[in-house]
Length: 224
Image 1 (cartoon, rainbow, N blue to C red):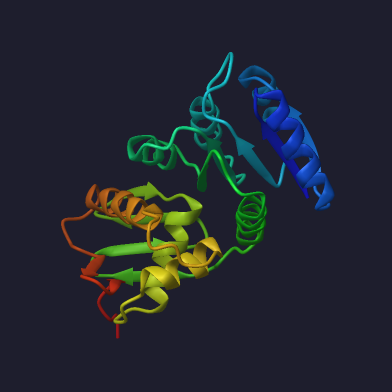
Image 2: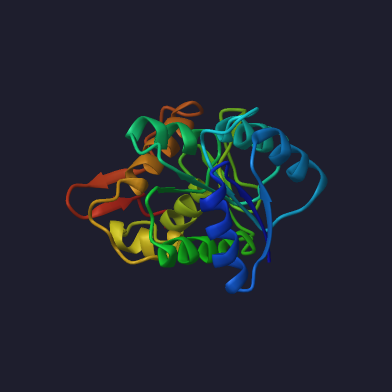
């Protein structure tokens, strides 16, 4: 698997390169945004580990440009920017996961492997509810003659909800099935994604699709 590390802190970049190469990844390192952009536009990678604050071009700009080009390479932000506003912004421009510094090497490896594994799983299914149609293979939601594109994680969340329509899915289940790691009650990653997913669907339809059962999880109404 080919990984691009974009990190201007040389000691950290070297640590990441050694860590990933010891785990059988083929690693390319870029230490500024300009070099990173040249790499992603001329080479194919299985995933990108991306810092936020970079010389020349920020990680946020790189992520946003890639998604606008239709590039769906999994992106893991690895950054000291830990505020909820930064997390939301990162997810809004298309990041797949977000890990703050300092971090545990084991968690980075686990999340990276999970991102790559899930990016190779392409569900082919059409789901419908009320006036909303969801194409899981193309990551698009349609309603009222309009459409909106979802990120891979948003699409995975909505797929799981449709596949379990009428059932409440717990936060623990979402984190295990979609992110592939053990439950952490302190993480608000799922809540951020649900908020963004609802916002996108609200642009298309006045119909409510995703419901919250307080203290238990999320669900959509049974489609049978």
